[in-house]
Length: 116
Image (cartoon, rainbow, N blue to C red; front, side, top):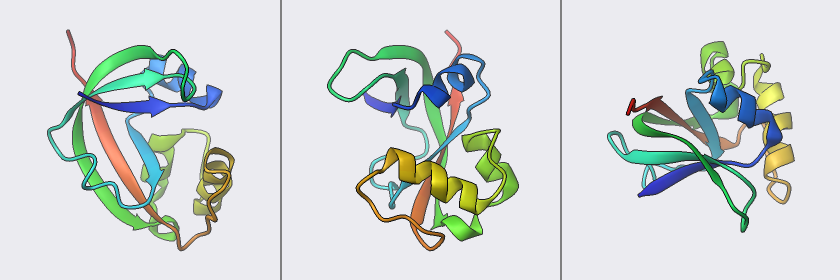
């Protein structure tokens, strides 16, 4: 089974409260995540123990440059962000060794929790 893992401490509260319904990942991730895939949504640092938050289904994967993101798309990633530049600044913190600007191609991976 695939996983959508979240590293940043910013995400934990959004995941637990179920306010996070989308993740923005750098690059074209359509080959990795496809509509209908069942994934584990997890939280934790790379190479360390991770905690399962819930199981989800991938609803949609959309690829576009950061500059074309809508307010709704941005806020589904992080309700505190408002502009494409906010996304650039945020992704630079996560992808520290990757150049990121408004023209960077990203994948919006939308997901919905599967109730047990």
